Image (cartoon, rainbow, N blue to C red; front, side, top):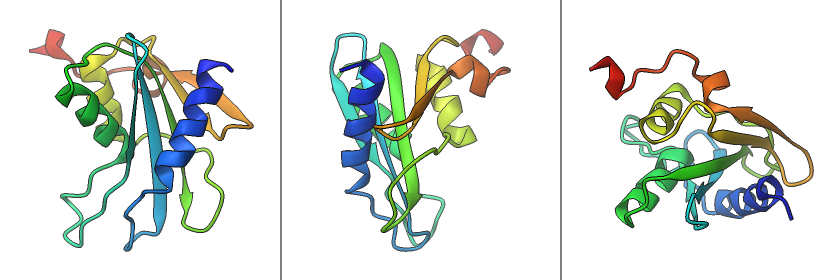
Length: 134
């Protein structure tokens, strides 16, 4: 099984845990570390909206909290509750958070386990703000 397919399947499973009572938009993410571990995340909404956590940032926070800082790829699946998840690009905040830890060549898989497209972080965030800007 390819990394992309394996990660898409894990992201689909993570999406099932989404807490999205307000938007009803469920997102799952699966983050592959360079050491071969997979950290998953789902979106967790709040009635106050701004404390809402995206699936991608949840997966990143889980990995970082476990000591992982080097990432290989991420798969993201999203869509309305009750529907099969599919193509769901990361929001701008998640792209910026990925740029904190990942090179422009970092792989991002979007779609589902049967059909997905591969992008790079550089393609989705060509002018990121990084530590080199400080």
